[in-house]
Image 1 (cartoon, rainbow over the protein chains, first blue to last red):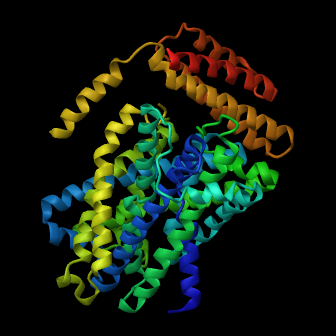
Image 2 (image 1 turned 135 degrees about the vertical axis):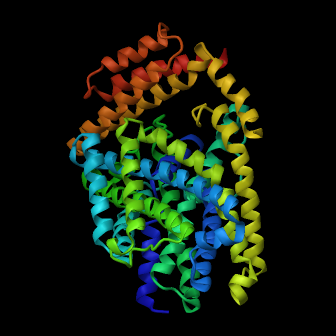
Image 3 (image 1 turned 90 degrees about the vertical axis):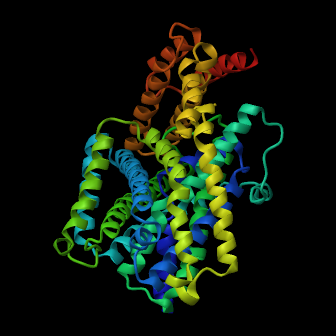
Length: 411
Length: 115
């Protein structure tokens, strides 16, 4: 285990953890329910640790991408359904992330939203064309570490630490009306979806193949998933806690992406604001690339095409065309004029609906001794995996009714 | 097929609801946006924000208020007029003025919720 590689891997996971949906839902959750939803972030983070570790392990041991194994394990029909569902969920998410990039560039430069969407998307596509996988992952992950300013800002505003720590205990706030209870449940489901977006596991697993992981890399995989994702999740929790501290007393329920940056501007002024916006820009840009590449990986792996950013773009032409098309379609969705914040809602909603479908094959593969041998899920991994599968299935069943009953969490 | 059956009554319910109670969420949105606008102007007055950020936020907040107003099912109501007044306020209005609008909208919200 190379300590430098491990540290870089953890830092990349931390910087790459937060995306537009976490930014939006963490800030909203904090302003609406104070610290009461922190535990949902904690529970969902353990979930993504479990599935992230499994996906990395499958990549390292079976040395085959998840979607390739999935087609053989589930058969063509069920495999196609899974593929289609994850492609749609990732495409909506990618469009939301590109919208987020455009909004942040708009806050930084004052340029028009549409122009910023085009400039941002072209810049991201150029970086995907030019950079090898490791550098794509590291540049956006490490620059996303600017997001740490949110944790520093939280310390600077002196929150009630006791109450904040109490938020890690599973709870439903007392005295909520039925309507408020439904909104609380909607937010819980949305947070689970935002933290456990399916693209994360597939991108991480394909990255393992790109970097030619083997069984010797399994300890690095475990540490990166647990420590990296855990620390990354603390950034989301910091955004939630600052929102509870600053926005609730001001009667603000953050409706636009830029509101989150106010959490840093209030204690640190214009310099803090710019650092926060830069962190958000790189974190969301990284997520845009990950969602787009996750789709190109899934499609190429399923149909057995040449794939990967360790090859030159023209050495894997169908893979290259796939990510370029997905990115272009996502950009076109944003250019139709749809509100990116609305798109975030749809991304979270659609992702939770397909989450069980996308994680079940991974759970089956990671537990299958014929593929994984001695590295198949142990009793702890297996039990946790199935507990989380039941949890996300329940969340998927409840998501649509909760969305309609609460008007998307607005009440 | 079961999903379609589950969705149908919910969609019907959502589509059929009209009147002040259906507008409650948009009044709440506008109230929150007015408070946010006040917070932005307050921080801008203290020199804590950049010009580009402030003008982009003003544009976004206005757009969201406009969307909330357009979604009202009773467009001639007193809360719709309050939203129109809010939209007529200049970008750099003092925070107290914006908070006053937020309070007025909150009163409508409270009145409808207790009805």
